[in-house]
Image (cartoon, rainbow, N blue to C red; front, side):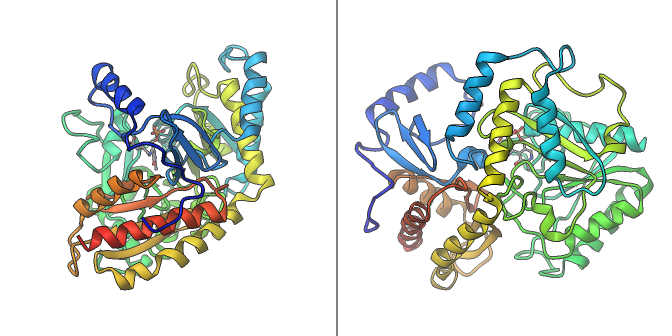
Length: 444
Ligand code: PLZ
């Protein structure tokens, strides 16, 4: 590999002996249903690097699936966790409330792109935030139908499995699924007939809603502003706005699922802002906790207050330690203007990777915003998805000291989700190495 190592440090074969031993224990004790990730086991992580149990250091381009935006083990978050844990680990907010929960809700109100007063509920995971958003929308509207998008990913619980599109591995054998979920086409400029005409793509989706269910039956439309697991698909300009305007005209609650794209990742605090969308509810998780499990639904106060007391919540939702971490993480995003930083990272990524579109026939498109960039691979000059090539590239990256994820309905997209605190030098090093791997593997 010609790219010099600076941030990376590979000192053993990959996987090293300690990882090999742990992999045996993993096979022995962990359910085979849990996804088998990289062959290396993490021991520690800091900023934009992860060090494994054999002392190898990798540049992190995954952020634990868009979680470590403020950096792995950010010292401010670690301090907040330690201090809070010594003071208050748990009471259950509905039993004995505490200030930390309210402070998180106040910060969320400050940042969500919703006009007028907003309120929140705190939960534990992205799937829970989506489920709660649906419950709240149904209660508020008195309707039951939920409209979801093609390629969507919303989670692994029963309702969110129904809302997720891809069967393998997320749904196969796990049915039956929750009823009253209707799927309509999302805008996919590279592949759909509407290209960059987002308004036409939205009209097409709206037609499908009218045909399948009828606007007066719909409680909520939910969309990821940039689709995550589905392939880092950026809808054409006007798509989300047309859809959300139509929802508002018909008394339908518009939910922006910002679980993956939210919290500065795409250059805005929330990715739907870019399209001028004013959602009614926002589901969020991942980066908001700086590494601790915490999630939320924030929405228009009138909608959030439609639920009877005790109808939403849970034992651990808004746990004090997780809240302290969230407050610290959100303050870091504010103080370091990580939304702006994401745009700088986009420039670095585009400068390094853009030539690939011209030079490599298998690279169909480089897309995304901020620090959420996807590279879609096809077979030669055809548009057939090339998941095999992506598998080969992904396998090589870990050998070369990079932690990278793939995505896409056909597994043919490489995704970049670096911590937003990654340095220019680290990002350039990682992207240059990735580029070389892509060039080499595409020629094999
Ligand atoms: N909504 C938009 O991206 C989680 C999970 C991948 P949880 N995405 C990564 C996997 O293999 O499980 C996600 C998302 C969007 C909801 C969720 C669900 O969030 O915190 O994983 O429940």
